[in-house]
Image 1 (cartoon, rainbow, N blue to C red):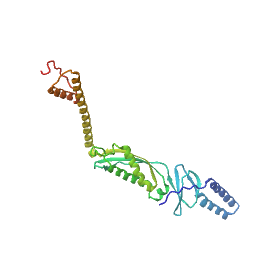
Image 2: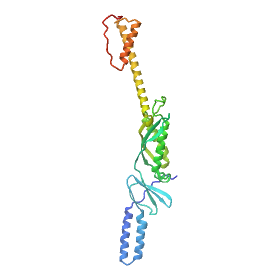
Image 3: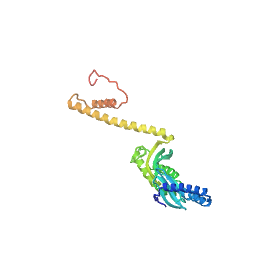
Image 4: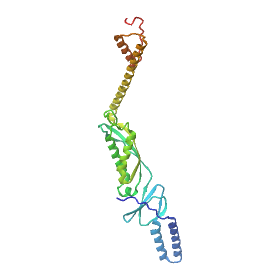
Length: 285
């Protein structure tokens, strides 16, 4: 496999001046009735001098091949002259954005999900990009889709069905992005491509299960909230009984303690406002 070889060809300004001088000389020779020499100079000028002139724009490169053999890559921007018989292929060194399409895949536990990624990449090795693969842009698109599919198959969407999962697609966005970037760099190294950044841009359950999973998430959230409320209420009831006992405000038997605990839990755990009842009689009537 070819590896990149950077070359610095001579400046093209002197060669361009020579091109203009040869044109002037050819014109003078034609005027002096020496057409054979004039035509020879004219052919040399346009077949050897002019074809070797090349312009390299900023963040671009020219990959040069001579009779089927790779001779080097010009990465420095400017005006140069190279062997006129070389074939020059332009390769951009700018960063590209790949906004991947939404893919429908199954996560680790088999739930159908929709996922898409945004990938920023650039050509790092021009020789590999040109000679190692047929079309490096198409190669990036296909390998990126394969990497996103593999990532989605490797982790669950969330912890609802896999409570022991250390990384989930929804909760571990930063870790998932790092893993996706690493896998893409491994896959695209053959084509001389460097991935600068990779992020999940879209993540959702597939439409056929989205409503059911939303209800499940809501139920899980309600259960967690109720659990927290009950734990807090039990602590408050315990604190109230202890304070009443410490201050000797009232002496309650076990039956009345149970009634008080029941009433306090109803007040503290209920999701509606309660209406207090004032007892004007004795404690037992």
